[in-house]
Image (cartoon, rainbow over all chains, first blue to last red; front, side, top):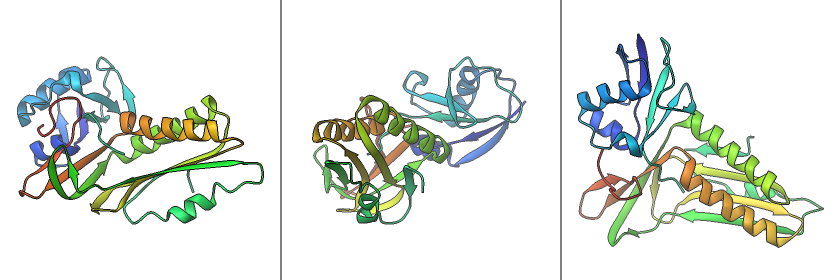
Length: 79
Length: 144
């Protein structure tokens, strides 16, 4: 399936891009994170992140659908 | 004009305060977060905010709705900067009006605390020694 990934903060710096479209067999965000984190050499562990699909927070086991926009959310620091 | 806003230009806090005006409100509490010239023992020269806008806006509106449910207030608004900021710039503004001061103070505190906790906005600090780093609070600061 094809997914759209958006990157922010340190994950964007590590990836060297703010977005990419990936072809993946990953069925949920947990599997997709493992693939992408390893390819980009991210060091933030999944336990410290949240994940959003199509603009809403969701669980790591949520079933992904072709064309979904997925964002891995690092710990926030607004305010 | 929505109740929670992200903006990449200077915040007009007087205009936002004007939206709080009400004949039935006896209290108005506002909070301003400013860019400080140091953090954690390091000299800070400037900073930059990034936001995942669609989710940040939804989350910000949800926090304001929570505040209206939990406290006896009339209005609550918040605006958060994104992009590059200088020392002394206003980074975030929160304003609450209420019949009485108690709920106004409590709601204002609640809103800024929840924003720092939940809204997908990230701060990149640029230090005097030339380094910079995204803050990811709860232990490790700079990394990815």
